Image (cartoon, rainbow, N blue to C red):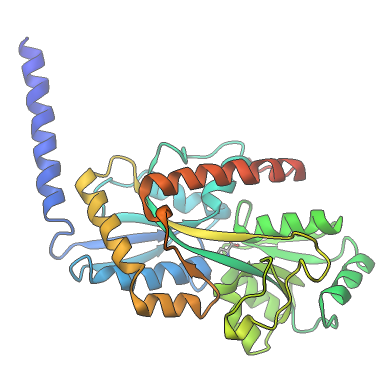
Length: 329
Ligand code: ASP
């Protein structure tokens, strides 16, 4: 009986401490760290930085910093957040990798279903197939012939196993039935830098990273991965890969916001409320739309719905990835 009373007292004390902590969340002079599991300057980093700005106001002007914990196709950064203190001061912004890495990695240092609190989805982002400026191919059909002629010699960059560029590249190779040498980076910011320098030949990357390069004609643009052309002014003349002959080639990825499992419910609510306000911020919307992304404006902004959506993405991409037969340890 004594033991039971002691245990109850501990439980009550923990709950009281959590409630007090949650009530003044985010505390004065505290800093929220958003972990980005890819390199600085890339598309995931960009959405996290823009979101951080939009989140500040609804979170009472709190300071938010970005921690680029890049590498291993996002799994290093994801693991960092899974192990972080669940107090709302460490969050994760990542993308479709949340759903592809569990299929691709034989062992992950975290459980994507049970080690995170799903806070909500941020955006949907199309991808583009781009090439180094030195390529002579002027359109997708010329690129296709060039790839066929150079089978086995084409260098295709990506942001590591499980990244969006890896997924898009896998689908692309399987559609073309072409073997390419894949070159992994810690994110697509360094991959684009190498593409500009001609060290890699092609890359599939989010429009949020490629729009300005395409607009400035610094890279060759071969197609967009949506079924309809985009309306974004800088991308509206870019044909879809589907209309260029890769029938039904469609890859739209997304970004979401997460916290470590066990973050108190009132803190989660404060964060989700702030996310909903941020997603209505006109400045944030304009920035994202100008880069071809679509801000989420549906039920996937609700934690349970976002989690359901991620599970459906695991089911959608699992068979495709398995068919490609690529796994990482
Ligand atoms: N675009 C990258 C990817 O392919 C990730 C990044 O650098 O944000 O997943």
